[in-house]
Structure formats: C-alpha cells, structure tokens
Amino acid sequence: IAAVGDSFIQGLCVKPEKNAIALLRNRYRKTLNLGMGGIGPLVQLAIFREYVEPLKPKVVLWAYTARTLDRVSGEAGNPILLNYLKRGYKQGLWSIQRELDDMLLRWIEGQVKSRIVERWLRPLVLTGVRQKIDLVFSKRQHEVKQKNEILNEILTMAKAAVDSWGGKLYFLYL
Image (tube, rainbow, N blue to C red; front, side):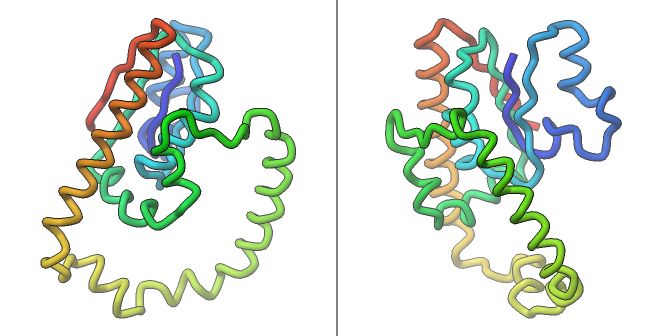
C-alpha cells in the first residue's frame, strides 16, 4: 500500500504509531506513507510520479481534504509542478534521494534562521488578512472551476497509471 495525501495521511498531531497509515501498516507490513502537511494536488501528483510509480504497489490510497484543493492556486504558479501534468514527466528524484535529503537539511537550517521575524509579521499583512477572510469573491467561482479541472486531470492520470500495473486506486475525500 502507498498512501498519498496531506497532513491527515502524514498523521500530523497524532502519535506516529496511532495515525491511520501506521494502523494500516500493523496489518499490511509493506505500507508506505507519503503524506505531507500543507501540500496540494500538484505536489501530490509529483510525489506519486516520483515515488509511487517506481514501486507499483497493489493499492494506492489518495486522500484529499477541502484544504488540499484550495492549495491548487499556489501550486499552479510553479512551472516545475505544472510539468507533472504532462504524461510521463518525471525528474528521477528517486535515484538522487540522498542528495535531495542533504539539500533539504541545508534549506531548513536557513529557513529557521530567516523565518523567526516573518512568522510574527505575516498575520499583520493586509493581503494575508484579506485572504484569510475571503474578501476576494470575484475570482472565487473561476478558481473553483480551474481547481476541479486540475484535480480531475490529476486523478485521471493517476488512475490510468495504477491500472496499467494492475493496482487499485482508492480516492478518499475527507
């Protein structure tokens, strides 16, 4: 089993041995948790392509929440993530995982140092406040349609890939 999703799949705020995927792992030992808090559908597609497809698991659990879909807007501005909408696109991240881990650790160290002040200022920025209380109504309807189209495309590609190796894709909307 391979599970893809956001913080729910990751098991955020739950003891590692008590999250949903850990409980599945108790019964099905070969269970991989690829959940990560704060990610949206395009990052989930990238994770699927880079880490699930090479394994070709019998079962793929793909979980979404309402918050997951809201993250499409931010991800759709990233050209690398948009490449994953092209059939078969991969960067081969699986083969350079050690290098990626080292780069990520260096990036995290830099972020921790630079984000201390920003963490306190962000809630005070007017655009952030407007987004929080959803004052931008005119864009809303168009954004929902665009998000749903991207979600449909992602799930169609994922299902075709899982079907191609004889697996089953289960879509969980929480």
